Amino acid sequence: METEKNELVLHTLSESEEETCRLGADIAAVAFPGLTLLLEGTLGSGKTTLVRGIAQALGARNVRSPSFTLINEYDGNIPIVHVDLYRLPKDGGDALGLEEYLLQDSLILVEWPDRWSSPPLADLWLVHFSLSSGGEETTRDVREIVIESRGARATVALKSLAERRRFVERS
Image (tube, rainbow, N blue to C red; front, side, top):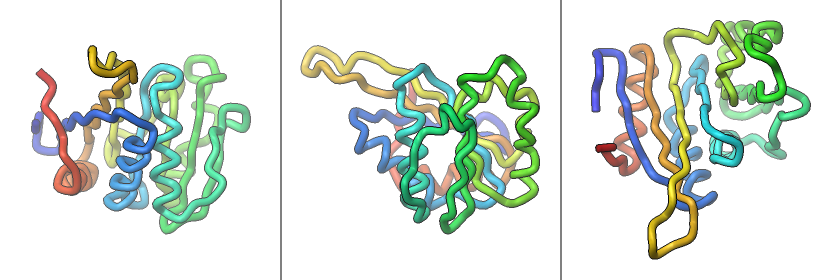
């Protein structure tokens, strides 16, 4: 569903860690240096799993959560910066100098972005994870993943992602 010229909103479901990693690999195929993904969702909703799928598809190894280190950098086809701001107070991410990574043409993946008051306004995807029950036939949690673009380049990349995989509309 297109909202404005430079914005696009897509919805997909993931029923497993493997599916979330595959989505990450598909994202890696359309990602570009300078793209920032702001990953929102509760603990255990799949943010780090998605990052692992993206980073591994771009050639990174030993991908792990930066919960204690705050920032992990990975060499890949695109330099990857994985940031976890969970342990910081509101606006605590501002002191980390994340804007410097934007100048280095890295792919920036930020968990708990509400603690960073000045994320970029373009070349941005907002990725929101929410958990819902898988229904009567399964006891697994289903993740709804909503991706919203900001900026022309980010919207073109998100359209490319939509062509690679099946997305569903949220009613």
